[in-house]
Length: 307
Image (cartoon, one colour):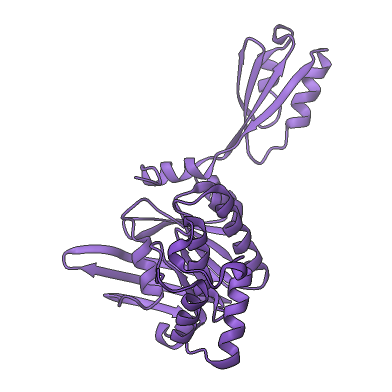
């Protein structure tokens, strides 16, 4: 089931086109990563999905309906922390719960669950201005969870925090997803996307230029894989013999390092090892080099994620 469907979305600010015919589908239960260099249109797209901006043209559907009919099913964690410094953690979450229309026991239960989930129950009576950066980020998430949304949109939720807080947030994302919450996640940290996202879309110049699983994206730019073997005596090995192993497209031998490039679909590791062993050459180490998501990103956009 598609929980977010975006078709031919356009958003202009005067003469500037921030989103330019963007198409995107996000399915129920996904952790979906949005990647793009600065100015690519990610945040504008998110604001359009949340109903904070109106599209110039195109359509957005949430659960098959108009955004305004379903936006209470959304939770939004903005890149810039949106909290009241002089409010306690409890008061901040309560304020946002009331904005979502919660009241009475439902509101109290929502506050307790959101603070418990983000690990802030013990400090719920402390003012936000006394919190560390990591605690503020977690409180920001709590305010988006108080109404138990079916979709949680997180825009750069780990910017400028310590590794422990980042790890807590990433684990929280995975726990929410296990409960059935669909997550839309943008970040400048490629390792976060690789760790938690099922599918990924790369956005540049207001358009989706590629989308899919990590494997599908890496397959876009390379159909090869690399293997490195460190051996005791490479002089005993015949480069030509290795190159004739099924799937091998290139072989380089430098001192005792053998680098073999093969077609991805060929599982020829055992054949390569068997050949080396047949020459009574001892293998000291084996390593592989895969195309990374960072390489895909650089290849497709020509820019680093932080540019």
